Amino acid sequence: MGLKAAAVEMTDLLTERFLSDRRVVSLTYEERSRLETAISEVKIASARTVIVKPGKRMETSNLLLDGFLARFLDDKNGLRQFVAFHVPGDFVDLHAYPMHMLDHGIVALTSARLAIFPHSELDRLNRGDEELTKKLWFSTLLDAAIHRTWVFRFGRLDGAGRVAHFFSETNARLHAAYLSDNHQFQLPITQADLGEICGLTSIHTNRVLRRLREEGLCTFREGTVTIPELSALERRGQFDRRYLYLNPDEQ
Amino acid sequence: MGLKAAAVEMTDLLTERFLSDRRVVSLTYEERSRLETAISEVKIASARTVIVKPGKRMETSNLLLDGFLARFLDDKNGLRQFVAFHVPGDFVDLHAYPMHMLDHGIVALTSARLAIFPHSELDRLNRGDEELTKKLWFSTLLDAAIHRTWVFRFGRLDGAGRVAHFFSETNARLHAAYLSDNHQFQLPITQADLGEICGLTSIHTNRVLRRLREEGLCTFREGTVTIPELSALERRGQFDRRYLYLNPDEQ
DNA sequence: CGAACGTTTGAGATGACTCAAGCGTTGTGG
DNA sequence: CCACAACGCTTGAGTCATCTCAAACGTTCG
Image 1 (tube, protein in one colour):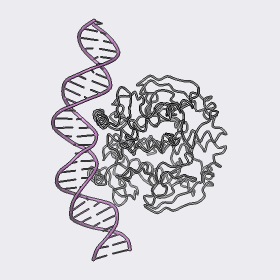
Image 2 (image 1 turned 45 degrees about the vertical axis):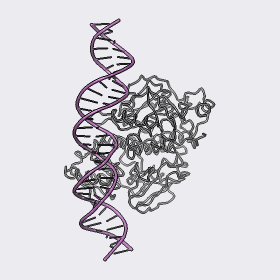
Image 3 (image 1 turned 120 degrees about the horizontal axis):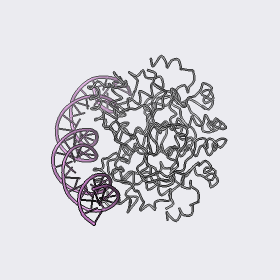
Image 4 (image 1 turned 180 degrees about the horizontal axis):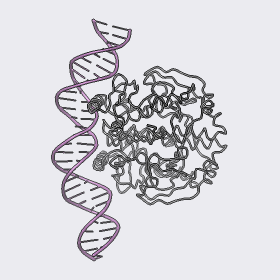
């Protein structure tokens, strides 16, 4: 069963969740240990604070250890669109390492713990280690694959489909991070946040959630998502987990 | 003026448009020459053919020399959502190099010419050249930045705004590739393609185009986009070019 | 106790969709 | 060489999903 298998793989490393449960690319214990030598400090961010402002020149990148973050773009009226959602284990802004600056902002949705990687330290790790470089590169491309799927979600799904897809995706990512058992997981965000993620108003989000609840697909109450039958929810959201490059499902 | 400045920079290299006009990261003539030693062949794809099927294991990547491609995800009913659009100079599926397989398909919208890069050759180039690796990595992240902006486009803009934004983006990318003078460019795709790019039906796309025409913002006829006043169109689409990481505008 | 916040419901407006059909151009086979 | 099919573009009419504006309720917190 999910959480049991997870427990076996748990280590004492800060980076234990980074690229966990991924096929093709996976990190050995030694690689993780080496990666951790590049951490300069661990920071706490409090809920509802902007961690990185758009356009800022970056000399460090953040690996999310605990909590939830989102990346956003604002429109001319200041209305915020979330363009990415992050769970523990995500290297949130590693793309700032080759790009030097971010074209968007990052906000903590809950209080969060972050491991800071100075880019100079990443340079040191990468020098002469093409394999590790490619794994870090891979992790930024996983992010891009998720972006593409969000484009699909917005272009092809209705409100209920979008929420169902987002819950399915988040379940899969949290499962890989040992934080979901495929039936229930913590997601301490508001309905308004969920709306900004799915491109819906908070009012419509509320109605969509009621419908999903009435159809027995999922509930979202007090920061907890409960899914009676995962495959039904995934079908409703047309969720196809392949883009997450996870290990073959063991169930 | 745009095209004049462009002519100065033109070279005889196949890769002349790759990362052209980008700040922070730019390739020297020597780097381009070295990059070209990794090309195994140049292929022609005919219009309306699928170049890469989703899920395929990849041992080469494609740099687009001429023509237009799109990447897509299909929904359960076979309805196609384009998740990326590519102009000459784009390294279309370089992400297959660290990822080994693609979670989506690639289709030629027009006939296209492609330079093929075997991954083994890229390994050879990258060995001991961390700078080049970071530049290739950067180019895949530019792609991700465009994805994020597409999410914004879908989440926050109405039909007319989406089309205006897409035209603004395409103009900027083609300008960087010396293929637009900021007033007119070739875009030989159908209204239905445009709809799939912007998440609209072809019928609604037609109406949106009429509106943009009537408002004097742009015309799209016989595969040509004409823009009387670029800044007006960009304003309508809330287009902010920063995510393309271009050189500061010289105008 | 009152303010702030998140959730829930109602009513009316609107943007985009579906279905239907006509028109012009291009290409092709009898 | 003509007829017809295929395709892309355009318009009309009716429907539906989602939005906006408005308001009420419960909880938390100062």
